[in-house]
Length: 300
Ligand SMILES: Nc1ncnc2c1ncn2[C@@H]1O[C@H](COP(=O)(O)OP(=O)(O)O)[C@@H](O)[C@H]1O
Ligand SMILES: O=P(O)(O)OC[C@H]1O[C@](O)(COP(=O)(O)O)[C@@H](O)[C@@H]1O
Image 1 (cartoon, protein in one colour):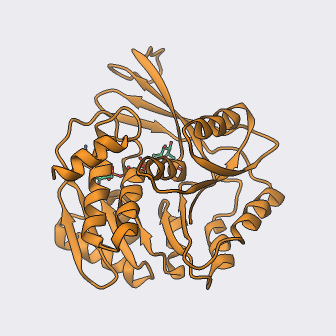
Image 2: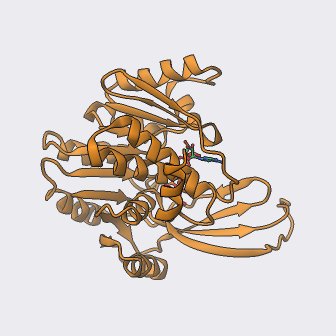
């Protein structure tokens, strides 16, 4: 079975405007919202690709209720821990000719609620896949992912991790099956700007040397690079699409990659489906639908 864990799910509130002027009253042309957060996005795209999974994490308040109901209406299986205080965060995505994001901290997670989530995860066993994604509220200790994974260590769970620098670095020793830094995150993790393809390969290898089994580096409109555990690497250019909203492209890529890999264990095919899913979300208003992903997959 596949599980995603999102410590801080979000309602992504997207506002479209011509221009953003700091220090002034700005008005949007139109706005929309999506139920998001990294693990939730992975769950949504996996479900759209007919890969059964359960979305776990923490929700609270009226936004949490809306998110849980919305996911349920969309046919997702969820198993959230409910917090009694605070609200599930609202992340602001401002679309001008650029994308500006304000990601909130999210509700504080008390110790007993954290324990409730860890208790649910105790049911995972050999052959299960666990995807841990996204930021954690700053009220939690910075080593929370590490604490969680230490508890799950040695059970034969396939681990996938997508988080920013310090959170990710601490869990490499648990030998995650897959990590997916984007270029900026890889630079932050391995010390400075990456200027060449050769440098990219060296930096990905550095993360593998620290414990990651497979390293998938997403490069936005430049495609992706995959370094596999057997030492073979693949480079795939992005599929040319008209980008509308790239929020969730990375999460979609993880979902596509996993859906492909779980079918036949073929890394090249997994990367191809991951790149198609990323591009499909980039050219969609929200997360990609299956038809768009499969069309891009088949034609590229
Ligand atoms: N503008 C784009 N055109 C085509 N494909 C894209 C575009 N942006 C992202 N993608 C695809 O989605 C993947 C993930 O996007 P990226 O922006 O690198 O991830 P993240 O959202 O985690 O920063 C990329 O590797 C690429 O394959
Ligand atoms: O947990 P974080 O790092 O604050 O990120 C949360 C945001 O990431 C997203 O999941 C999008 O992630 P990607 O663009 O990296 O795929 C949004 O839905 C959400 O608002």
